[in-house]
Image 1 (cartoon, rainbow, N blue to C red):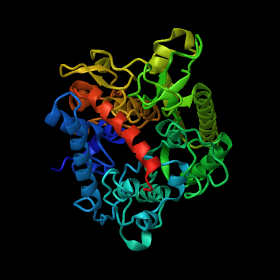
Image 2 (cartoon, rainbow, N blue to C red):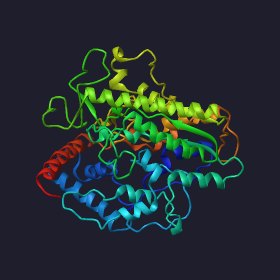
Image 3 (cartoon, helix red, strand yellow):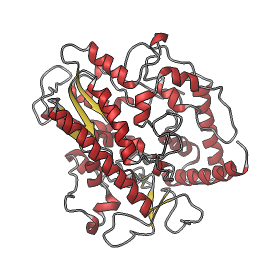
Image 4 (cartoon, rainbow, N blue to C red):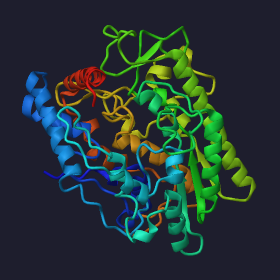
Length: 461
């Protein structure tokens, strides 16, 4: 079975839709049985279809079988051939990349890293998934242009456009310079080698001074791209993402932090700091402090560009997510800083029951959603309506900069330009009709996480 992953509902595609040009907007798509590297929603729906809402030994077998099908598709099946493409997409976003990746990654490097895949019995994850995904973004032909970086591609798009170049260039980089701290639950600060592709692999958080040095190189590359408007986005505080869940209550009254942060499927009662993966409150606070300094550096880059006469803007996505942080601020008024105010969700989202929140998504057992809705089942990336919120913030700045929005028929749209959230809700199956076996699915993920970790420590593979 082939199922197209909905990249037409990414934040850039949502903006293109509201601009009235989605039909001309080029973006990658990922087919196959379940995304790249994995679409957790499709996995849970397969388990729900075959086994209902509970957990039994056959659930683990079916999960492994589904992941084996996915691995075979990308490594040996229909998704394995290298695409032969020449056109440059308008959406050049790539998951998992930090600043250095954007500065250096090329098709030549992707191809050099593709190795003969191994079909391990236990480890069924797609090998080289980021390289395989990038080869659907980067043009692979002609062969003599395989050394272009993402900034080279953007520059070519600008040079091809009439007069002013790219109408609006959105730069959203930097989150992955800190996100591994919560996805890996390990804080390893950058050291020598942070500025090389091979040397940076073990680091999960960049020291602010290292981030600033990388950002200066990004600034230089962006300045070389012909664009009428440039929008830079701040880095959200990664400890708000529900991939890591605070346990044991807040460290102290009015604190932003919990004593420990662990996986969302580990309950407060079951958490054991001597056994379960976690980061501490002190580590979470240090990571957030680093991100604050990243954002100071991004803000300064925009300020200097405007001083130089460039039409650059800042979108404070860190502030947006802070204002949507349920466990940190909304549920704990004593922790709110003076600047804090709740984020006003668009009317279509505010009317949804139960309320859409930043909690880890969960189902009610009756076909609906019990909580969450802003984050998808990986606990990191937004849902469709979450992407809509991000797109709305960028659209607001674009409209203020004088960008003209049109209907699909070409008629100019008066301001303010509002994202069609009713359309997004109709297509957001995680918000409207999530898999009802999420709790059971989390139990499967928890078992696999623990079992595979033990096996990897015991076996040489």
